[in-house]
Image (cartoon, rainbow, N blue to C red):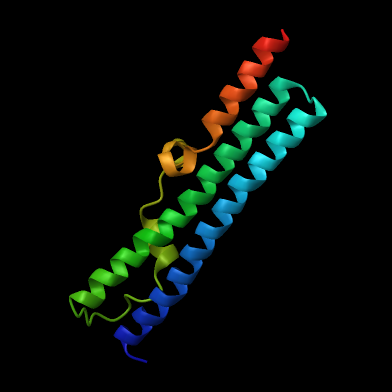
Length: 140
């Protein structure tokens, strides 16, 4: 297998996984909405409901950070293929590249938080929290 073939194979595998992350991310959002509605119907504690929404929001942020790492590698592979890179050993380096640029714990937490704050990730969590807060104020 040539280096270009290996890069193409890696690209296809990563792209399939990237798309799977996208689908799963939508399921996380739908599950969050479902859990929120169930909490409202069952009359669960509003503070507990807000905590659950926040946890799911942060969990999706972590999940999307993993997805973005795949996206970064996909872009790197596309650049290598476009330039006709013939350098050996460039394929199948996802984890090696990530490990080489890995941040410390605070940097990693900041990366997760930044992912969670992206508009496409954040929606619908702030809306759920606002609804929860409004119901809390109305009840109290």
